[in-house]
Length: 462
Image 1 (cartoon, rainbow, N blue to C red):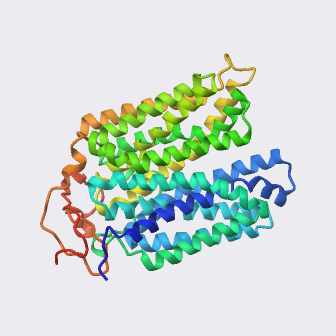
Image 2 (image 1 turned 90 degrees about the vertical axis):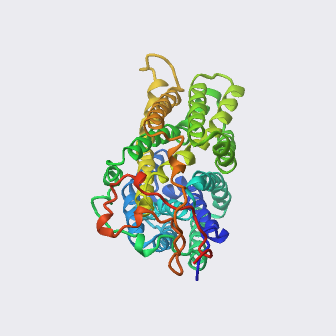
């Protein structure tokens, strides 16, 4: 059958995949300490240390396997990678639900990190089926699905935990398996066979995935900006609870509600505000406004001493979420269609690297500046450092905007070209010079040479 690239069911499946991936991660957080105590017999204090290593293992697997799965999807297509990853997640949650010993918990987190790395493939799928000028808006929907999963997962997990520490894992397994079955019937392949390329192990490692774009400097600079911004954003989940308890003597419910409100507003900014902002202000301005709001929020939180001020800066920070899909859209618009999987693997690896670095760095900063050894008591130090990181990210982005004329370049590629009819059963990729034979596609050329056509529906002209 011919596939409409704007199919609602296709997009719904992708958003559900991202949403359920994060729900599955968050749903286990409330019961994980009790599960570790149950399995090991340790105290809660020691269980916290073990839990930290489980997070480290999960993030490390995401870091190493994101580019591998991205490259595999460029070679074999998006559909099989996405469906297999969902089946793998279902298996992981069943392992966690059954795990009789600690080693099985680590095995489960390892498997979850590997399968969860396919989120980059989901983003590449969206890039395949979306016109250049709408990619940032679609990536905003992905960000919103991510944010909603982050909000709903822990709440559902806490409620299910009342039925036992294993209950959330069984529910997460059923959700992942049900979505895999749904995808089997509604998900077409988005990358046609003549646009695929060879799998290369040199590109399928975290640094190789990033360095694969070393001859495309615009991508390298934008990835650097994304890395700094994502590293700063990790301060919220890693030290917000310690900071608010120390500064304002908050309870765990107050901490949870504040993060929930932040997540709702963050998702709203990505799902609703990105499109209108890009339409009226442009993608470059949208990224810079997001950076400005994030810097204001981080520095404000680090210095504030009143709860009203804290809530004010928390809300300001939530609206900085528009920067992420806009920046991701710029990245996607500057690589070829058969590099989207590799690019999103590099983006996922970049984000996973921040998830490895940030927990240690942020908590160590907080610990030091609240200890007697600190030259000055400054519990907001991690947030102040985050503000400085965003300023550096903004500096890199401004350099890219001036050097590569980002305000015009991303959508110049939408000029009309003669249309092509896609192969039967394939979703549409806009053809351009990326459709060269495989031996001419080394993945290192500039996307400026590619002049993709405006998106045509698969049910359109033959």
